[in-house]
Amino acid sequence: MRYKRIFLIVLDSLGIGAMPDAADYGDAGTNTFVHIWERMQGLSIPNLRKLGMGNLCRVTEDKESLGYRMRLKEASTGKDTMTGHWEMMGILTTKPFRTFTETGFPAELIKELEEKCGRKIIGNKAASGTEILEELAEREIQNGELIVYTSADSVLQICGNEETMGVETLYRYCEIARELTMKEEWRVGRVIARPYTGQKKGEFRRTANRRDYALAPEKKTVLDFLKENKVPVVGIGKIEDIFCGQGITESAHSKSSVHGMEQTIQKAKELKEGLVFTNLVDFDALWGHRRNPEGYGREIESFDVKLGELLSVLGEDDLVMLTADHGNDPTHTGTDHTRETVPLLMYAKSMSGQAELKDSDTFGVIGATIADNFAVTLPDYLIGESLLDKLI
Image (cartoon, rainbow, N blue to C red; front, side, top):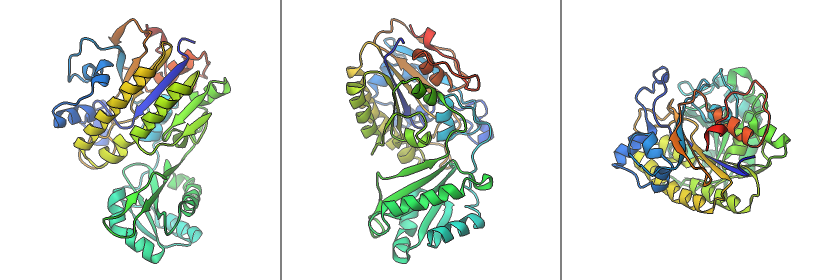
């Protein structure tokens, strides 16, 4: 074991340029990070630049950069959260999850959900979570109805007012929806509970009590094999939800990306060895989908401050890995994720070298490197080759 602790942090949706097949997804010319950089006329990100992000994206020439950096291409089909994270942990997804962006959910599914929940469903379309509250939340509260909607992702989302419906009731409805959407023709990647507060337009606010009901990986991932080999695996943010708890030994949900970093920093002060796997969702949920490059840029700058705090508490035998799961270019059309390459920045205080490594054709190098570090043998069906011997 070279590193006692590895901190894998996913900056959700921070892509760095269109994949070769991006045009097939309607995403030609996308570049989340660079387009934000251009819109903001630069970003104040000294710590990311120190780890080579500016050099990797060709927006700066920082001679004093540390560690190793590279671009990762996604081998899986799709551009969503689950396929990206699963691929990091070795799972290749060749059949994309179902989406209902253009049509809404089938009448048969809606009818079954209404019968099992005992509420009339309204919405049933692709929409922004904040906009659909403004449009339908008053009606939901007054009539005891149920807002169901989707997005460009493979998701079924259900809104519930915390004061009038209650979060436990909302969670129960989502569990029902998850069971129904296990059918192949309705099979979405995630059912998401979207609790909110407020009683009238202009006052509705989504809360931090969101809960994701994701499909479980069909095969064991790197996380499962780490856990089986007694390696602690701490999931922060959405990680437990994305993997349905599989391979996780401890988890903590986050109220925001800043909170997620604070939880990660706290673990850096407590954990003796193992993997801390963190997802920072605000980049994607608050700014990417809402096509707000300025907000996204400010979020990156806020992250950079917390990154500096994390780096200051690392030991000599700690490794930080920064990456993303897909793109979400806020200057692109629509509100969907974008099919992009992602960065991988790797740094440890013990490293004597620094370099830009050759591009990888899979995110799977991340999990393979982590498993190699902890001397965990992986089965052949998991994809990705370890980078450990390149980190000197």
